[in-house]
Image (cartoon, rainbow, N blue to C red; front, side):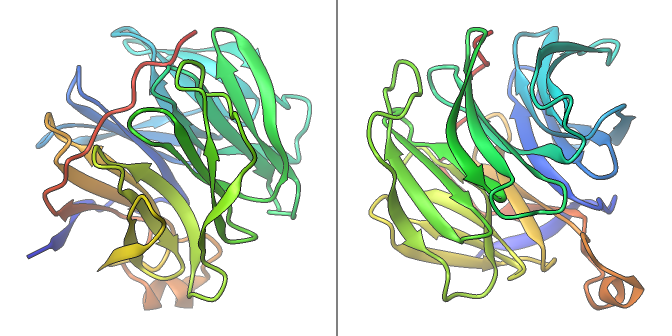
Length: 290
């Protein structure tokens, strides 16, 4: 039996970007619009909230002392001990109309990261690739980049534009994380309730997606079939992450984005972070290759 419980009752305006660091047994996630990084030592540590000078959406490990943050002005190196941010590569730093969004590290160490218009304007963002200091734009004209994730062998990448609601699949070079073919539709979400948000792929190639606006965590087989849906306590579920030393549990972030007072009353768990007690064969992202 699957049970879902509250991992953190701190309500995030836009909870996103959960990442688990197995070396330190620490879970990190963001409140993008609140400019906060949340941290929890697994499994019983208190949640520590770090204020940030910029909006940030994703964190990747560099080594024991450094992390790479994806932010509204580019890629920043964060000192783990002090929390100090140092700009590593500017990305749209001179464009106040955009911010960062969904991101994930490919098995090669390459980082795919998304940008979008703060107003969620269609076509206002893109998905980029970063690897050993180089940045390339892979897919321009993206409205809301989400569901960036990869097969365990690194030969397949997935992504979506939530504004369009098609989950895409594209072949990749496992050594670099660069696309080697043209994207094709993996799953058509347009007729279902809610929008495709953050995703992660487990060790068996099953893709787990948080369905925004539908209070659901969905699983898709490698051949593109929805094989399971788990009800979530908050309507705007946003991104899953494997947690624990064996990557055998999941957490899911959520949001109260765009809610007024009555909306928050109708969705009282919105913005909280949840533990999904469902045994899975998860996997961790590798360190990013600077």
